[in-house]
Length: 258
Image 1 (spheres, one colour):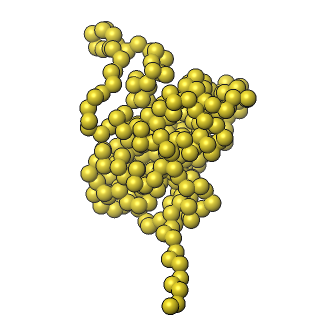
Image 2 (cartoon, rainbow, N blue to C red):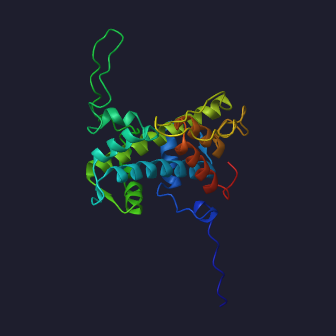
Image 3 (cartoon, one colour):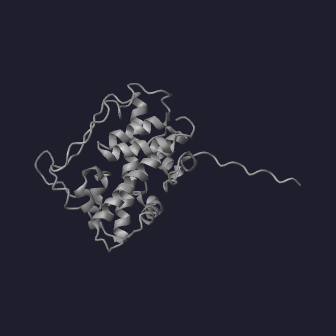
């Protein structure tokens, strides 16, 4: 019997570029999107969201690794806080901060309209999927990113990274769905973070991150460009936004048009 030729692999981030495969699989991305919206999520959109989430978490882990002592390879929540203090671009997944003991007391005291202190949110026992309840789904991907940078983390640090990833991707899904519903992004700007003792960076082209005034496609499908527009909304400016958008475009260059 003649041997059958090997079936070629489907194109995706692993074949579209030299980048490593994102540890956050499209199936996980689509599950998060389903928690937020009934809209269909294109394959390219799922790969783009996975790539953006990996870029953001990689940057956070790298910042925590740099904040840790040189001889220490196990990261702690204190390293995470130090990384965010050093680089405000890493301050993403804000809803997790009220939930995690790591950030409790660091976000300040909140007051309602009558001047009464708002108590910290308690852990929800609801079985309904949410960014907080479903945070454990990201643990395997988070550990792969840690290993990729030659470090590990204490359980509390892994929990915080899980939560930040879950909240960030949930917010990304919500903004992408809004872009589809509204037919595009009407306006958003860019903010560049510069330390007082650093020179100002070269200005980016005026339309470098601007979403098209009106999106193409139907109002029932979230495409790649919708995820990119949501990314530009979630990451307020600076090198992290630029890198996340560039890597997402590269990761999806050979996927089906989103």
